[in-house]
Image (cartoon, rainbow, N blue to C red; front, side, top):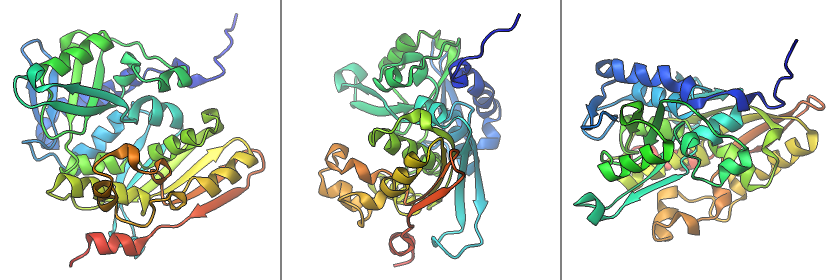
Length: 334
């Protein structure tokens, strides 16, 4: 007797189980990855990948794979092309783009604490990574129809300090995990590892823009992309600007979808150049809008250039272009 397979095989996958061995590698080989490991009194593992520990490119690549729930390949490669100015590229591929990018990698879980709760400074971070799918606190999971169930979980935070206990307790509660079953990786954007793992979101940004455009996510069956790897900036706003510019003005994505009409529409509407705020460095835009992401045109958060192939006809549509001049002006020598 045979069982009928699920129409969507991703529903049978656990992003936390698939990423568990990657988390273990980061923790067990901490010296190799230049990260620091601490544990709370209750046993939760905290990985410092750029706060006090140096971290590095390899730590960033592994963190990006953890973020994708073990469903993505992430690598650094050197480009022989003269553009877009820097030779180091972050390259990403996934055959489960919706689950890897939106069900796991997307930084959508808002985690905060007041200064009264922390006993010091207020805390805020957007959580990304597979533990999001255990907590399912975001409306996005209702649309995805996905919830993970696993005995261990991992979360990544792009913040410049380790999370306070009150935030850790919230994550444990919402994920229904024992303290020793949770690992939190902290990668400040201005660190090397943080820069790498943010730039590695180039395909995720394309998937999120596809969602914003109202296109059925089930259409997208493959995703690959590259974005130039800038050197980190010591200032947090400039670091945020550089990582965003890498994708918005230097990111290239190739998606495979089911139907021609979707491919044609995505090629036309997906690239970042369609946005009202396109053409200025992200740090400048962010500052002009009083550091409020929600005032920035949502259409800006997209790769610069896209190719979209259709399984229906085998044709490929192209849209957008990288802006090497803008990147050179921002990252080059004054």
